[in-house]
Amino acid sequence: MRNNGGPTRSIIQTVLEYDNVTDEHISLCEEITSNPIVLSLPVPNTEHVLPFAAVAGPENSKDPAKRTPGCYLIKPKGDDNMSNSYVGQSVHTGNRVKDHANGKDPRTAKFVESMQGNGEVQLFLLTPEVLSKLPEGLTLTQFLCVLEQYLFFKYRPCINAAFVAKPGIPWTEQAIAQHRAATGEPVYIYRSIESDQASELELVYTADSMGHVSELFGYERTWLKNVMKRGGWYRQSVFFSKVPLDETLDCHMSQEDLCKYVAELKSLPQRTGGNMAVCVLDTTTQVTVTYRSKNEAARAM
Image (cartoon, rainbow, N blue to C red):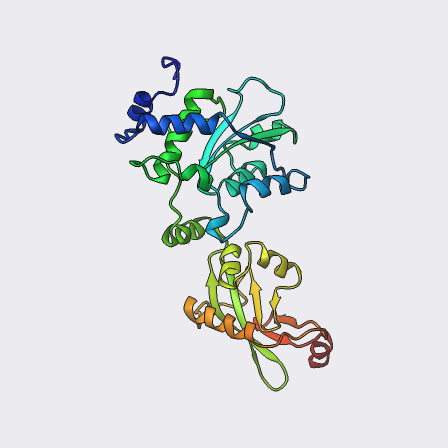
């Protein structure tokens, strides 16, 4: 990078090994990077989060239409040294930048912390209007790499460890499942089986992570976290646990069957008010019994 003056077509074509990069692609990169959207870094629990989401899209949206691809540059506010920065790309810019702002990315965690909430992000978004100008020859993923490489040569960001743009992970269903299996903590899903006096819990499914459970039940990613804070019960019929309640780990449902069961639960009128169900574990026999209320549990014991 030190030996090359600027982001020309020939050097980007050579570095990325994309034969189809044209002067028109480089001209579009120049147009995009000359008009960045400048915002405060959306550090959690600050007034900067909502303005950022309004421009870059919501963090956890499942609607592809609300996900804006693009590149971004993170730097301290008021620092004219553009090389003191980090450059990245994403097909969902809103989510990716928030990962940096939350300190979730180890490559930028210390850099973001050092700015002490006084960071700035410059967005180079591929809006529908920009995408309508995209010349033929490159896919969206490839053009994102070209745009990121253009920014590397233009600003020479010192926080980046590598200066060759690479496409992000294609988050297919298989890739997501592998990621969850590698990084997530399992969640055990139990169903309450009622008898005449009490209820027993039956293991129906083991999910890869809390986010996986939220998705299976049709809610946003942090839904289960809130359910667990309230005792782990869903509609007094399903109980979630981070540890197995007994040694029996054989699940009684496939993922497809679980989704059908959840749909059935949602179709039933939700019981409101009344007492909260109580789960009691006998440490001697390791048998778990579910009671409809604290009073019922007290009477049984």
